[in-house]
Length: 299
Ligand code: CP
Ligand code: NVA
Image (cartoon, rainbow, N blue to C red; front, side, top):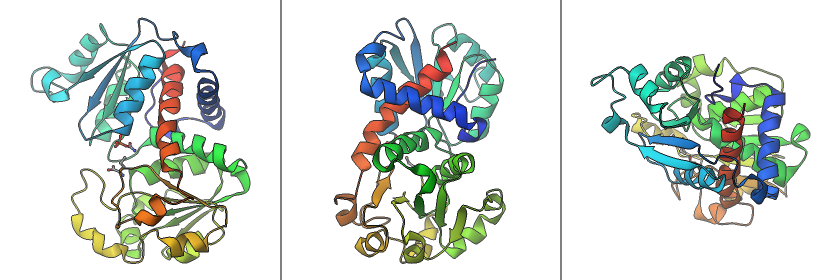
């Protein structure tokens, strides 16, 4: 069976620890890994925009001695019109060793992974963004050390990044306040019910939710491909600003996967401020992508 990287909840703590540990090793000693993927090629498909994921996979693979080819899914015909996706994948496997896909169709990722032709990596879908949250986990460990006893807070939408964060929380059981507007909670009640443990709290007040928090995390209110643009109106008081940061722990860090809508989910003051670790976060994406690639490709 191929190893895939579709969702964090497909892995156990030992496996996630292993990926994080590989990322730390590469970060510490990149030269040691510079030829590990000689003669290996990674395919990238982006059906939605990307800056960080595109660059971190592309540059990350090259720094491991490998090659990258970016494919346009419409051109190669993943839409089942010209040929079956299985046939496309079987042909791709003659040329590339692994395929990362960003799309708006999580089921397609699962279906392609099931075919067991080459490893499939989820580079963000409408459902989840596991590469992001593993990169963030590395950042949290570097910045805050003791993940077990700290309070994290998510303030914002119920979206793909949050789902991956919930998957991670369910494994590591750190304290997590999830602060979502009441209306958004109602809209996603069925999905939210799946996440239930003592360390997880669901709230609707950003000030209460950020109390004593060591890490405030947010993301855009309207994700790529989200058709419900009207929901912006539910996020009154949800802009992460100085007031919210001040109600958190003194040494709080502010995290955002980026891209950010300045003035909407976060003020420029916070995004550019001293507590913000967003660029550290963006850079860590590369070490995590490299570790994921090693994890799925190494026998
Ligand atoms: N955070 C993130 O995935 O950024 P991109 O959408 O630019 O890849
Ligand atoms: N939730 C955002 C994340 C972007 C990296 C989106 O899906 O647009």
